[in-house]
Image (cartoon, rainbow, N blue to C red; front, side, top):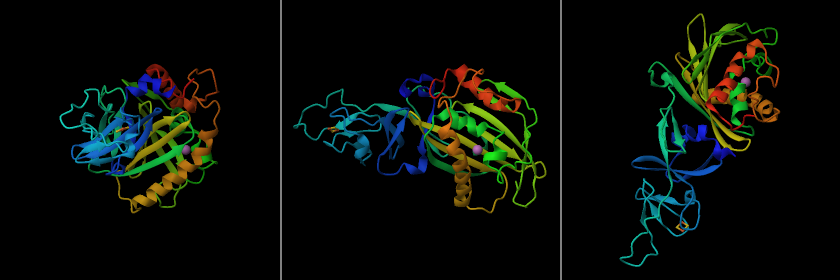
Length: 325
Ligand code: FES
Ligand code: CO
């Protein structure tokens, strides 16, 4: 069961773009749990999407004077989930102490709202580019995928497919070889050495050449790569983070960060990334088994799959059960 993955319940899970949480309450499903996000003057809040009175979805209601109001009978909950008003109560009658919404911890960072279902608020992983003024950031997603998160994440960390699935964009079939590289483990973070990838036109000049990719796992569902141009030292990073919705249902989000001038509009950059992702989607939606095998004897890995193997070891070490076998 999704809701039982305690490693992920203990972690910060991406729930939405900050800007997508507007006046009206928003329902999101996190690890099979329906959650309502709403905004008032104090910020963005997350409750279990369930009114204790008759089980209505609080996301069907509205925000009034900073309180989340249930659509069914108008009970009003404040930012902490305490019920402040029950319209049906006669004058002088106390609001029952049990009248509460179940609140989840939230954090706003890197353009996204993150929710912690177990309310234990661990430190969020670092994405240093985001606080670096020399970078421009473009948010990407939501992209729905009918696959479990580990298959989606591993695809993102997979070096060997670029020349095939993304032929003509991120690689060319005449240059499929991946040279050996090393992996480094540091606390909860795993990253690769720079890996040379031959690309048809990495900087828009029309010239094909090698660029260097570094892959990094920050959390079970948050990973990144940085692509470096050896001639200019231009760097482009994509952070990928996955919202596990339900069994074989995920939503992918990302941040694309550039430390160089790029005349493309945000829309064009998102459009390109959508096109690339659309090439990966049929692969991850049809992989068998749907759950990522953590037993390294299952499936046949090559030396160039070291990053994927490191990711599998990482999930095993942390004890992630969702989407693994
Ligand atoms: Fe929410 Fe009755 S179900 S107020
Ligand atoms: Co791909």
